Every structure is written in C-alpha cells, then in structure tokens.
Amino acid sequence: MITRVSRRFRLQVLPPNRWLSRNSWMSKRTLEDVRQKGGATNPKRRKIFPAPDPPNLAYASSSNEAPKSTPFQRPTPLITFSYTPEHELEFSDSALRYFVDPPIGAQLGYGFDRWIRRPDEKGRIDSLLKAWSKLRREKGPLGEIGAVSWRGVMTKILTAPYEVFDGWDLNVMFIDGTMYFEEHLTEQKLYARNNLEPRHERLTYFGYAFESYCTSEHQPGSKSNPRPPVTHVDPDGHPPGWSGDVNTNIQWCNVIKTKLGNTRLIIGGEVDCVRGQRTAKLDNLVELKTSMAISSPMDETKFEKKLLKFFFQSFLLGVPEIVVGFRNHHGTLTTVQSFQTMQLPRLVRGKRGSWDPQTCLEWADRFIQYLRQHINDESVAASTGNPSSERSEDGAGEESEKKAVRKPPVWRVKFVPKSGVFVNLLDEEGVADVERGDDVDRVGFLPRWYYDEVSNKSNSHS
Image (tube, rainbow, N blue to C red; front, side, top):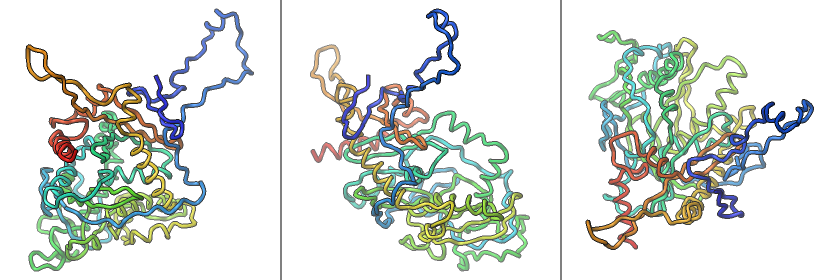
C-alpha cells in the first residue's frame, strides 16, 4: 500500500525495500495471449509504457536558472585522529605527513608489488562518532547539530547536480534532532571495489604512490630528520624522493564543524598532508591528486570536470591548496601544479566543462531540508500505521507491565542521475542487512554504545 503523507511535499513513503517503478511491474503481452483473446498483433501500433513514478525530491538540473546564494560557513577544526599501520584508531597526529616537492620523472608504478591495501568495507561512521563523542565529553555541548557525515558522502550529495552516470545509496538515521549518513554499499559493489581490473588497480595505485613522493614523516628542513635531496642515492635502492611503501591503513583524519544554510554539520575526512609547520588552523593543509597530462582540448575539458570533486573534497574540510601531479600513460610524473581551492570555480567559469558551486550548495541545502522534514516519527507512523516502537515484557512466568521501547527507523535514500532522490523506510529484514557485516553490536548502523549515549542524553533532557 502506498501512503501519500502530504501532497504539498509530494512525499511517497514506499513499501519497505521496494523502489516503485511501474516499468518493473509491467508484463509483456505474448503471442499466445493474443491468440487466446482472439486478437491480432498490429506492428504499427505503438506500445505505450506508463511513466515511472516521480522521485520524492526532483533532480536538480545544472541547466536551470541561476541558483540562489546558499551560505556555507568556513569550517572550524575540532579534533584530529590517526589510523596506525594496523588501522587502529588513536587520538594523535602519528599519521600526519608534511609536504615536500616530488621529483619530476618519478615512476608512480614503483612499489606496486609491495602495496599494503586495506580492503574496502561498509561505509561505517564509527570512528567519526568516537571523535564526536570525545569532543562532547571534553568540551560539553557544541550546539544543535543537523547532520553527521564523512566528507565523501557530503561530496556525493553536493556534486549530484552534475552527475549523469553514477548513482548512490545512503542509509540515514534521525536521532534526537541529528541525522546520520552512511554510504550504503551492496556486496556486489564491495566485491567490485576490491577486485578491480589490473589496469584500474594500477591507476588507483598511481595516486597513492604520488603521495609517497610528496610527503615526509618529518617537517622538511627540521633538525630531527631533514629529507635528503632528490639526487641522494638511497641505500635501500629506493628511487629519489620515495618516502616509503604505500600502506592505505595509515590515515590522518580531521573533524570539522560547519554550516550549510541553516544546518550545522559535523564532517570528518582524511587529509593528505600539511605545508610547513603544523598549526591548529586549517590554512596550510594540502590535498594531493593525480591526473593525466593535458595534451588536447578534450583532455582539458575532462580535467575541468574532475575539478568539481577536487574542489568540494577540499572545500568541505577547509583545505586551501590542492597539488596535482600530471602523469603520462606509463605512470611517469611529468609536471606538478598547485591550485588554490577557492580559485577553482573561476578557472572553469564560462568553459565547456564549467560548473557552479552555488548550484551544488543550493541542491545540498534543499536535500538536507527535505530529509529533515520527512525522515521523522510522523512519516514512520504514516507509512506503517504505528509509531516506531517495539514491545518488551519485564518479568518471567507472570503478566507484567508492557513497556514501549523506541526502535529508531533506518531509511534508504537513493539518488538516480537525471531523475532525483527516492526515500524508502527499511523493514526489519532491511535493517538486519544494514547491521550485518562486522562484530559490532549495532542499532541500525549506529554502534550500540553511541546510540545508548545519545539516547540517555535525550532522556535526561526530557
């Protein structure tokens, strides 16, 4: 049964775990059907297919009229943490790296056979929640927070108006006024990410190798361990400028607070390195990227389109500089260029591959406001006919008073390019699938320890 909660917002609460598509329900009329009904086929008759159901939130076309200005607050740094070579979280800067100039001509395929690659997993936000929990304990309340998310998820949301091929799925929970976003990855997607074709795997490695050539564990020129010049012959036989074999377990992550429109956001993400001395500010953070060397107008257009994601990945965390290493087909570093993050929109303005960050900000603000209005208890009650709760009995062997225990819903938010966003309330089987995949006790996709923490806080304030 489809329940339309509000015509004004065009919200459709879909049947659990079903995307409404009349095309998927439609059956073909066979020749035997025609014969039994005494009809005849007419090759000139056009088949009329019913239109697919409209999305809950219509696609934001980048070709519409000029977008309105949506404010985005400059990010404020909150806390950093590191992942060790064994990918264990620690609240330190042990994984911090410093920028150094990479040698032109470096071979980005070097060390590929020694690459320690951490497999892709479900997009859990546990580490981000640990950092957020630590902050609240140490600094007290930090104001009302509208959403908590990794930087990668927010980048997908923001760049959706210009995305024409790749859709995405999120799991979303709404607890005590805050939304939590987790990227939903099916087993098929995880398998594909962890089993790349050899060519694509090598191209992925080029980016990590560039980071090794561009970074050092110690600040350049420091007395503790000055980095030797690129002409230095490494006693272990490594090429000039190589700082160590690639281990993708190691990450240095920053957590920031910002505001999009009227919504305060907590965003976490990996930062590649800093230029010069480490400070408490964000003004010397550096993002590292690689791209094919530009040799034609078509190459230039492709690169300008890539700059959209480059921009928002850095913009969201307040990273002011992006260093791009250009390579040839063989993985040889040919040139290196530094870009100021806030200058990127000007570089593409008026060009074939142009994009407007205001279009993205307006869309993301509309996306978040839509979810805040519709992913709530009222929508759950409207779609199921009951409030979101489960019943448990205290005592054994005798009738006892029944106590309502809140069971937070999990929503699936699906973005389809050129169509829009579809919202689906997961049923028990869907929630169980979200909870599976590791040995952590979970409520939805949130760790139970965190859910209990925010639930107790909410109860103490009620």
